[in-house]
Image (cartoon, rainbow over all chains, first blue to last red):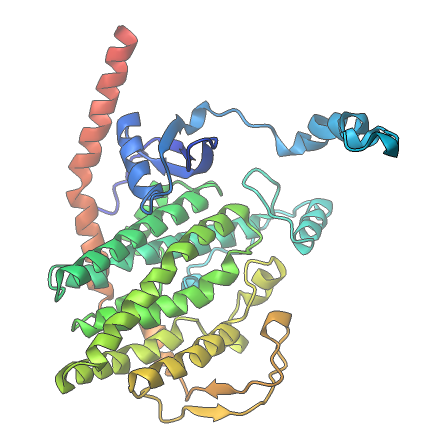
Length: 98
Length: 344
């Protein structure tokens, strides 16, 4: 049987909300035939020790990612704008905390 | 450890294509600066190949590692022992899946990796080719095999490849219960009847040497170590990890009142090994030294001639084959649902 290629099963990305009030966070990926099975597999695979209250499942192919090669071009504009940070501005000491 | 098969002859030849020297230098600078390499980052082909092999072998080891322990799930002595053993075996399945997912980020599909395992092309750790003859083996495996695995896996949490490092962090968090679960079994047996204690001693006698071998060949013979060290995939050498393991092991065996089956075992007081890495530097404390390891046995097991090599692979093949209809049915159902959704 090992000469027969095993067919691929779709890949899903798993996001888990660990506690009430927190955002869903990416925890990993898994293979499953459909979304229902992916959700069940995510429960078994990523929440064996009470890690979560809610799970999101997203088909991996549905994710559009930025290209690491474009990192400079993509993020440089935010680096050079220091005036977007509060510490850029001088406030007289007498005014106190602001 | 899980990469023992890296030194096997089926290793592909080094990449022929000459890579951009500038890219390679920049890559090494990033590694030297302790930056993590991510899936879409440029990496040398040899780095990709080494990691694919290492992570997939590690994953295979987790999956095959379920078999020796699965052997005792139905015969655990109490419900508590059964529940904990079952939880441990489930964890091993989870660890295998985290690792397959990490390996897949390098470009090889899980199905291809599965097929490599089933065809015998891919290797897994030598340790899982030994049989589990008594209940005490569940204790010895948790205590010794998982203990050795933890020694190996903790430094891998700082591996230069991000997806592997993150998978190892999850694995290590979960793994610590495994060793304690095993040691608890050993404690219970050693406090039990003379027959139970003899059973514990017998298990230790059979697992001690294979566990020392788990760390792989001695540093002088390990072909892939230097490059893996430069790439910060490997943080400690085989011998350094083996030493850490042995130093931790001796007092644990002593507490149990068991004897390590090693007539050459001796304590070298305060030698202060000149070990390269700062974390291992220890000028004060001495070290336990093991007797000579039978490397011929290790090579035989890796070559497929261990006590259970054939049994393990045939069990995996059978499970894969028996599960084929489930995979097919799930895929057919998914396709049908998708079609109905499109029609609606």
